[in-house]
Every structure is written in structure tokens, then in C-alpha cells.
Image (cartoon, helix red, strand yellow):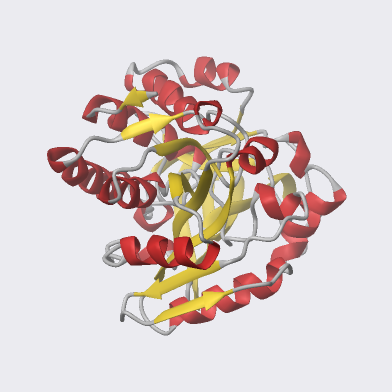
Length: 341
């Protein structure tokens, strides 16, 4: 168990700037939320193993475009958790983040209820565009029941659905009725989380953030996290496509005659260099500032930015038939085969 302070948060957000792969919350927006929390509340981070197997945990997260992270979706998060407790007849003992990069939402919910934030996330240490892309779905587990509350205050529930695509369709359409929605979901015993999730992903992000904050050489950091330096250059074009609930982009980066392109659906999904596929999801792809090595949120990219594309390996579990069905270029209708780092 660890009491998190603002120094821990700053390191977490720097680490997240790599692991969130362009998605999640922008650093400053997330820091503002965490700062507000820490001026009023104590934020406790607990490992999965510090919970009894019979304790109930749940996920608190949001659904919406990374372009609209300035919207407050947690106003009624307490109500969402209480409704989930009533549906399951179990008290929730800890809050899990839906992904790396959304811990501020989970932390805000947890502190409102005087509960700890759990040192893990649903996606195995990264962000991904759709809620059903997670470790429970990868292992064939249902995510329901769910309680969703959108920014207009509308409330809905979802029970008994095992198909991840149906879950995504339901949540995305409900979120699109307003400007996004808060979701409380996957109430399960801690033993189920222990069996399905990757332990310590928040602590791992903090450790990475320490290296970035210390201005460690990028190649040294990449060696530490088994990553790879893919390409460096300047952004020359950003083509954006409208799709409600998502930020869809194709980013072109040039270095002399060489051209890299990055395909984005909230998070970075595919990189090509001179029209050859170099790396794709489910591995992690991030654009970092070439000067300070801090990952750039996809809503903050600009023409002429000097960036470096880096890639990190995802959990081996995702490199499987079931993993590729949930999380691969073909899943997003992109005409590329999976290419591992």
C-alpha cells in the first residue's frame, strides 16, 4: 500500500505519456484532476495481492473521444458505483482503472468513496480505443453488469452481455447521445482480477516516469522497457476524419526523403515507413517529443513538431488468435497484417 503524492503523480503522467500511446488524458488535464484530488483527499494505491480473494473490485472509466477530455464525466460516479453494488449485492473494496492514461478518473471515483486505487489496469499496461479491448475479454470473460451515466445525466445499465462488440456498440452509442459517459463495470472478486490482469502497471508507469523526468537518454530508456526507436522527423500533415466518439487521424512524418505514417483511432495503431509496415497494434506505438522524450497526446500534435516514433512490446497474451480478433489492424478495418516489434 502506498500513499501517492504529487511527485508520484508527475512521474505517473510522464510514464503514461508512453504507455497510453497517444490516448488517455493529456498530461496537464490529468494533473489538474489529480491536484484537485490531493488537495482534499488521500489517494491510496494498493496492489492486487493486498486484497482478500473474496473482496469485490470494479472498474471506473469513461467512453468518448480523446479530443474531448475537458468534459467532466465523473459528476455522478459515486451513484454509478452504488448502483453497481445494489445490482450485485456486494460492497466494492477497490477501484480499477479502465486503462493506462485514465487513472485520474478511477482515482477521482475511488477517493469520493474513500476506496483505494488498484495497482493494475484492464488493458495490461496500455490504452486502447474500445472498452472491450481488455484482459477479461481476452480471456473470454463477461464485462457486465455495467452502469453508464452520460454527461447529460442519463443513466442506463447493461446486464448479461458476453459479446465484446455488442458491449462497445451499446456504450459508444450511449456516450454519443451526450459528450461522453462514465462507466462502472466488471464487479468481480479480487481473485478474478488476480487471475486475469497484469499486476503493478501503475507502479511500472511511475518507474518509467522517473527515467523520463531524469532526462535519461531515450535509447537507454528503450533498453529498459524492451522498446525500439522507429523513426524521427517532422510532422508534415495531419489528416483528420470525423467519427463521433473517436479521434481518427493519419499523421505523416518526414525525414529527408523518408516518410513515416501513423494511423490513429484515439490511440496509435499502425506505423509504416516508406510504405512498409514496421509495427502495429497490439504492440504499443507512441510519438514522443524529440527534445524531452515526453509522449505527445494525439490531440496535441501539430504540423512541424519534431517527433520520434517509438514502439514497445505488449503482453504475449495479446499475440494470439483471440488477441488479434480483439486488437489488430483488421479489427479496425485497416488493410494491414499484424507486425510485431
